[in-house]
Length: 249
Image (cartoon, rainbow, N blue to C red):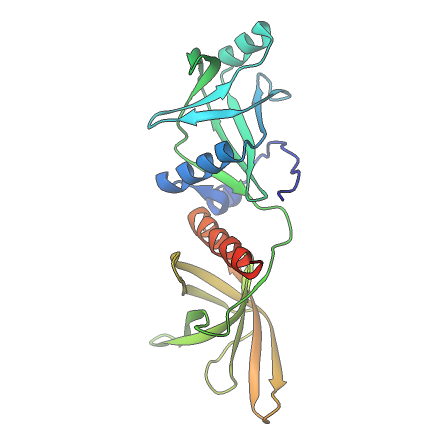
């Protein structure tokens, strides 16, 4: 069951623009399809951006999206005349937002509708604690981490204990991989079975030495994703959601 997320638009910094932007066409289409399929609420801000209407996403095409109009012809006209519109909805418990600068009124499938240009990019705004998925024991997930210092950079394969939208937990033998708290490791590769691979930087936030029952020392590292791009966020969220569903069968 999806949470009731407050659909207030957000003003993003330059860094947030880069971190939360989704610009791949297939990913944008997937999000819009899910909003339609789930009949998710949509808030459309217009005018001075303190005015808004509640609406529904009806459909989209190669170059447009259609939103249902309201009952008031006056308000509908003010929306159409607005020089800026901000679309806010939710996908997989994450706020989704984009803006356009023009719209027209037309009939779509016998229903009065606003026709907006198809967005070149959208933003997924994660503002909650991430669900942490314990990685499978059989066929475990692996993260390729490049360790060392130039010119001796060595890729190491490290086992993932758990994974979420915010980061990963890694485990390895103490002599296998040198992981240092506070260090950022760029270009780490994670293969998500059936969902492709993602590449991201990780920062080691904490490192704990654990002695196992057979007397071996292992390291457990809590790592945070750094600047994970929007498409990778969706890819990862789809993987975590699919694994949750399998576990709940």
